[in-house]
Image (cartoon, rainbow, N blue to C red; front, side, top):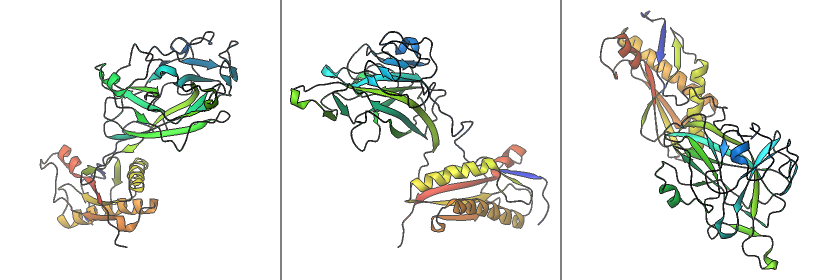
Length: 363
């Protein structure tokens, strides 16, 4: 191979992590450990818990081991429960007579990125003194903090009337009623961000009539009881991009040294995101294409582009992707994205791209 003018060639690869760390929780004070005052009075979340507040007139509670009142841990006015972790948690009604509801709201550490996927998870436990259990809990994301003067459920129509950008309520995945009064239950959901989400609101956004409610006291003739839950360990984490079929994506942070084809750590993380998405979507296959700038001979560029596209493909296969779901090609400098003869244009043209399409298994 003929030597080129650059010792280091950078291939751009669309990477949606940006500066976000995969393990970073985007919820402020997700375990409720940070507090302003040790809780003394009920209905105290707005005053005592850092970052958290109630977006409605519902009187959400804050519990902490430091309290010597009915807001302590493990014993409190709703029963006995240790914290899932640490020494604090929140408490709220997900079901109550006359559609009374309580919610908790928190600012996120950063605005969610449009078209990116996130996983929201939390732990909850049904309070011992509850009359029944529900299997309906949801999440709403908004651009600005909500302030709604109601004690009833926050329906989608009520959210729309506030003239604040907000998502429709999305339900947590449930295989049954949240009915465990002893152990903490872990629930989660995934979202694709719209790009305006700065705040998170949690609670039951359904009316009593629309809520799946398991009544423990039917024999007493009590039709509308109370379902009170403790909540802890709220976490929102970045998963990866929401790739669309038949769209061309350019890979970022895939750096190759001169005459070398080994992937750097940032490149490997980018490819792990691609693999993760393909693993969750078995009906998709991927085509990898390598490209170079105009420096060097056509023969050199053709070989170089094929080898680097092949390196990317081999790494995805090593991660576990079926060979039938991937192909790679090199196009040398035949398909530039910028035809200007400048260093900036050449950096753009030194790239690896991929396209996902529907995969049909012939077997």
